[in-house]
Structures are given as structure tokens and as C-alpha cells.
Length: 126
Image (cartoon, rainbow, N blue to C red; front, side, top):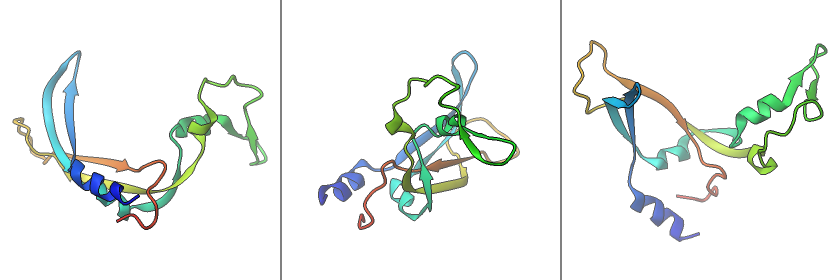
């Protein structure tokens, strides 16, 4: 428990690269660095590893009530633990600037993404 903060600091930044891909990665569009500690300042939310499976497993009928499809559709081979929702903090990076590309454009390249950990870190994690 005391080692985790030290381990996170030693990892450094997460580096994201964006490539244009046709049949092979052909053009480097840019990259950015992301400090994972910033996820501690995200919005509280509930997330699952297989969020799409949760959406597929529910159906809203005409009355607006949720009705499970487990009886109608086969289990897609996903362990139930992967669809379990967890409380976590979700960091939303909006229009983070990409750097390092040799391509020229009128607009500055940017990327938007979200980042979270499942399960989330303890509340007292610093």
C-alpha cells in the first residue's frame, strides 16, 4: 500500500501516439504525454471493463422498464466479473495538443480521450 505511490511516480508519463493507418502505419500525426496522476482529479462515475456488454444485455421495452436479454441472447463468452460496474474517477482530456508531426495543417492537431482505472485507487492514494 505504501509502495504503490512510489511505483506510480517511477513509471513516468504515459505517451500517446496517433498514426494514420491504411494497410500499414504510414504517417505519424503526433503524440502527447499524459501524467497518470491526473486521473485522481476526474469525475466520479461507474465503469465496467466490458461496458458494451452491459448495454447489449439490457433492453428498454415499450413501458420504459428494463428487461434483461440473457434468456434470448447467448452469453458472448465474457466472464460476469468483466461486466461488473466499479466506482472510479474518469479523467476527460479534451483537445490535448499533439506534437512531433512533420505534416503541416491549418489547424493544430489535437486528441480527446478519457482515462480511468478499474478498480480505482484507494481514496487516500496520493
